[in-house]
Image (cartoon, rainbow, N blue to C red):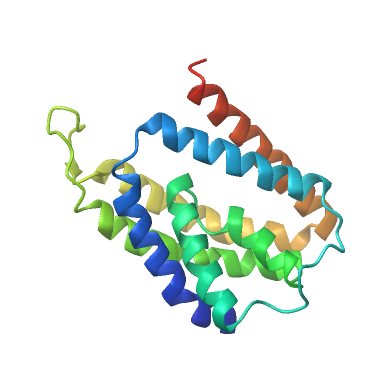
Length: 190
């Protein structure tokens, strides 16, 4: 809980700043950002040594003040929760993969709430908006995502705790590389 509590302000500020930034970008630019960062993270998770550490403890002070908003900012730009960036950050700072996965679900909430609230205030051309859209948030999709998240999060956490750390890391890496490759394919127009 200490990591969530101390990282919360920075993550939430980064998420809000990212909403304003993302609203100015074309979707293809966002695809390139997601694909590039996702591929780097996935390859690190796949081929990085288990013992690689930047530090033995999570950053505090100035480093936390830099890392936490960046985590929120890039997570919103990539359209992801806290896991894709949070898990590698935490494991590089000495946290076990299982604890990092559990903590990252809290990061997801810290990213989602301010960013969704922010996207409600993004102005889109009414001719381009699908029905049931407020700002840049489609309410039907939002409701479906919330419902599925409530159902699948406990299952994912339980599954993660049953898997051995190396398998969990490998599974996460493979998933992220495939998703990133698909996003890069779309960004290239294929």
